[in-house]
Image (cartoon, rainbow, N blue to C red; front, side, top):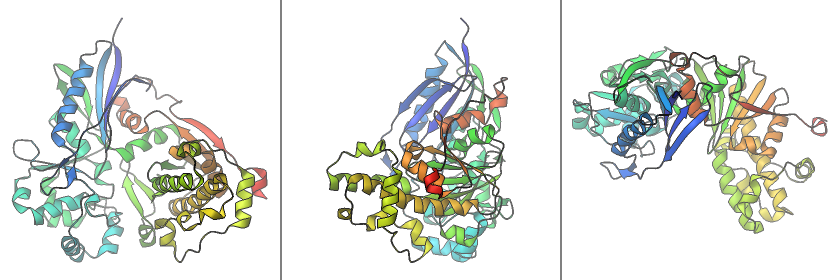
Length: 463
């Protein structure tokens, strides 16, 4: 029996590091998951252990090359963003893999934005809210001024997906999906690096810019394979939708953050949108994607604990609670939304936390009100990236796509939309494989990549 042709995907998340093999129909035929223990950087702040990560990549590839039932035709990589690996003259890392949650020095922040036009003007050009080290370009600025001796030794700085690719190919690349996602590096008004990258000499540390569809011929343990240059995970997760649907759509990707993504809104970010935690990033094809962030998954988790404790329930109960339109109607009649002094607070503050749980007759009522309050924020957040675009379809993936209360309220909140809960296995890894489809797979793209469930507005709610 001949070996099955597959593509290998190494998917590096903040918590889990995964390995997948997809067949030519993009079904998962093999997977592994590992977790690493964090280490600390040279300042004592927790960070990823880059050496453990390097060893894991080689061990993973060694494992799958040895599997005689599979023929590895290609490999690609996706990782979390906002992380640079800084290489010295020998091609090895010379700094820790600094954590993007590491506090950024206030004096350096002031120096940077004072020099380059102020926070609002700069953020407008780069489509990047002010996020400290989460603006990955700021990590290089920080190294230049806070650790100049180390900075001078850096030969190349690679975003994490491109570092993983480099381990296999030995080639330096900068991927547009990593550069274009709240990095402070890319000027969306010029479609080029921002002027500071040139003036500060940072451009000399960066590799040539390439598309996420780029591949390189590589050899591993005597096997010739096609290797991608790696993708930022947020962009990778959007790819299955882009290849499956031609009509304009918006995707709400739900997890700890609920991120509304509109690949069909080409309008530049406004200052007002930036104030409401909007940003733009670049797709694997180099096109702008407007995004709005809401910390709704975290809010849900925290408030569910509060409800469960107050009503002496297990939090598991709320994972499958069904939508009850009578409860919704009762709550709307009895309770009003808290007064919101400004729209910035609407996004950044918990609405439900202000409510007295003793005012609810049951935990069913309390949980439905939590979802009503989250939907008040979700509608505002998603509407920000819908303005000015002709979108008629809305997809939801992640945790809230399985929440019938959320999905029914969303359908009501956007009556002019076709609203679908979407599901697929491992969207980020799948998108990373699809990005280089034509380089390894002669079969046409399958038309069943995504499973959809339609949500309509009940007639009673339309009256």
